[in-house]
Length: 336
Image 1: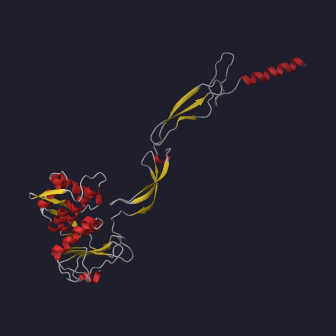
Image 2 (image 1 turned 90 degrees about the vertical axis):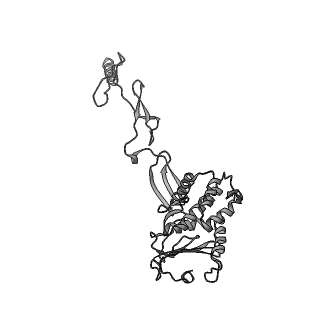
Image 3 (image 1 turned 60 degrees about the horizontal axis):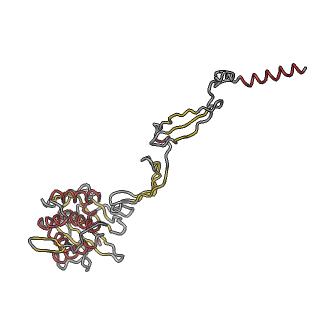
């Protein structure tokens, strides 16, 4: 009986020593040390990301031999191992602001919320009027506080470009003064026709007369030749998003739409130096011009384009652009 038990135990041990391989029934022969590897779970050595391959490792359950493998980046970008974070993107002069749930490793974006318009976008709303008064072909009215449009008619109309030219150069100059590493101030000297003036005085002269010799003197003060300064102004227009406006300050030529001119004016009215220079220009060029009995902070008039801005109690400005060939002379009084 004891012999039978010993034989049964031996048979059981033999069965334990002879195991099956992965799905194939392979035998492990411990007597010779040969066996078919049976690998366990994969473990990350270097985790695969959305942009870089990874490496994993497996161990044989019998002999603990390690095998490493490359883990490839999935072709489907949505299936990759992204590292998401919420990023607040502030609006720029021409670009929207928003909160983005975006991968920190690659440009993959899965969500964009809390979208706000560009800083100088002129915005329509339920009360925006879209019919111009008699004699007016195109009309824009808004303010520098809300940028909501009281009137929007014919923004894409091409209008006389002299004002856009003057404002584009003025904004370019104040940009230089506002740089954190600026070496120029509004009191920096500018040599003009053999005499020295302050930069503030020359900005005033430019906005008043738009003379090419003035812009040459201003460009030289910035260290630019004509081509360099023209490129600087073009880059500033692009940054503001006024893509329908082109300026050559040395040929004194430009093209501009009413909408782009309104955007340039809204930006200029945020610069105290330009507001002051425009006020001086109003007094010098238009004398006692009044709108509803008050002196405008800004006023410009040509044969077909009239532009004005009035100071509001909160320190902002309401501005109006009128374009037409037969506009009533006192129309501003009824619109402001």
